[in-house]
Length: 311
Image (cartoon, rainbow, N blue to C red):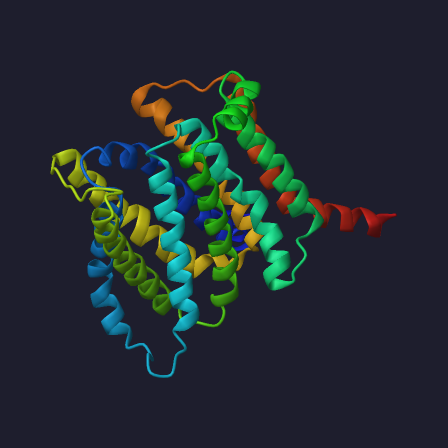
């Protein structure tokens, strides 16, 4: 198989891996940014800048807004906002380790929602791949002791853990619902609606949280915060959401969830390169299991089918 044939066959998976790579750098950036800005204001600015950059492109596309039912895309935008907001708020109260594991559980939630909502049963290879990936995430998140991680979650389950778990459910729902809409709507229309809805809801919640004294509106500008907002707005929002909206339809929701599970691997690699943070033996085993899970999801069903034909 030459490189062009390989890319054509796995185009969806390759592009979603790029999306995952861009996401993986945001954890430290967001965590540090929240020291100087309130969470909802950060999300609002992140999506506002993305929308402003995207607007000239949308105007040139001359989309048919009058004859389009915008309720489904609006709901998709709500799911996207709820995923980002609960994840960002959760980061204020929980550890990075628990956040990585609980967010990663989305990979197991996606096939359940796909069955309930789309009435589509995931392929056997995808189900096995999900199980292997989930174990891999557990190893990768567990550091030197998986037992310690599980015990920490069981005995010290806090608001941040709850919000992060809810975040996993929202992101899983987003992946499945995007699969349903991507073949029915223009990808640019889906994209701009998601970004506008997320920005508006973030600013609304920023004001509401300030009124009810849940979170005080604040912004203490620094170069670090400016870089954080620009990176998340351009690369981790505009670029990733554009690619995800356009190309996720090339793979099943369950397989997309497995690809997104590479985020902690990329994050650990980035941490190793830039801040010399070493990956434990458990972490390396977890990374290997996630990779194996992807291979199983890609090849198991065709392998079994070929074996049956050869018998």
